[in-house]
Amino acid sequence: MIGNKFVLIGILGLFVLPMSLKAQKQKKIKGEEIAIGYLNNSFDTYDKIQKTIWSTPELGFLEVKSSALLQAHLADNGFKVEKGVVGIPTAFVATYGSGSPVIGILAEFDALNGLSQDTVPYQKALIPGGNGHGCGHQLLGTGAVAGAIAIKKWLEKAQIKGTLKVFGTPAEEGGGGKVFFAQGGLFNGVDAVLDWHPASRNAVRTETSLARISIIYHFSGKAAHAAGNPEKGRSALDGVEAMNQMVNALREHIPSDARIHYVITNGGGLSPNVVPAEAEVSYYVRAKNTEELFDILKRVDNAADGAALGTGTTVTKNRLGGAIYPLLLNKPFTKLIQKNLERVGGIEWDERESAYAKKIAETTNTSQEDLDKVKTVKKYDEDSFGRLSPGSTDVADVSWNVPVGSFVAATFVPGSPGHSWQNVAAGGTSIGTKGLLNASKVFALTAIDLFSDPTLLEPIKTDFNKSRGKDFKYTPIVPDKGPELDYRVIK
Image 1 (tube, one colour):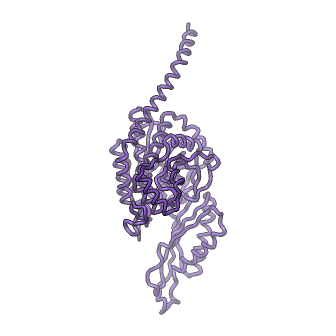
Image 2 (cartoon, rainbow, N blue to C red):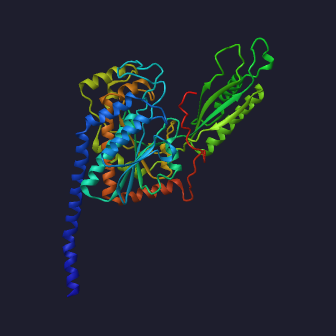
């Protein structure tokens, strides 16, 4: 009798299980309709938010209005917002839900100096020398928040357990805000993090990045009358120039994929007849891994010491805390995002947007064929996975603490250089808004996948642990140093 009972239960299970899976699938599809429907009906909301941030471009760690706007919108939509995390006034973490899995979304909102630009298809600064969103972080932050709210609406309706976190990370452009989130343990307990970036194409990120460190070299000498008693002077500017000359010679003798950049931030004064007592130069050093990074940095430091010795000056070296790792890729996560990127599809410009894009394209000699690529999604290329990109991003430090899946969406006109007036112009129009909403849909679909089926996280975590190594323990490149909150302040 007991045996027959179990046989009966087993037979019924053959019918119940498929029905259960079918109901689960239908529930997920219904959830996707809720999330995507919200985004389809919210163009005006996110167009206004991104353009508000675009019109008040704020530099790293100074994004007071931009951060506050995103925080307020999240709070108004049911997120609990923790402000001023990790000692950064404009940093925040917004949380919704409870339990596992815990999915994070990265948001940025800092601008670049010297890139002020109107939304016209020709170069025209709104404020000469002013700030501008040449990297599209007003779109990045707004798209991340839009996606998070769409996911929240689905979680709420589906009544599924899980926690969603939006990490409002300032100062990606040189300040390395995410480094301090990682150092402060804010990604502990997070299962996976979603990331995107504005671009001129729609594609998953399959390239890793360069590690980067920022150093300020301050030379001190002695002021004197350059004509009356020059023998009593020691020029700090001579020290800077001597150092730069030696570093320029050094470039020939470093790996071809490494990078060194500098700007003279203090030239030592305005009067040629005064020997400059103080001068300063700011450097970036980039390399494919931290070992190579420190090797090149030592040689740059030696150039600074030699320049100081040769010019009779002294030099102090300030390594900024926002130094960043190379990006750690995650193949299973990338393939999951690729699937959803293809489901969302490319960007469709209307007649007005197409005419505007053509005028932008004329400034870069970009063909119509290239412009049409925004309508498509780039196919996943297994051979390109793991190639080295010459850029750097503080997302990299996140990627060594928790699995990160990243992609780009078309918000700019193809052919436009990075950090350009063309990007500022297009990003501040509906072209930018359409791109950010596509990105938010990819966020929504991917998060729904992970919340609906947490087993998808297993291969993602396995790949993460294998890639970073069994004994890896995260330590910032410049440990025990907080953010330079005034690094963008003119002194």
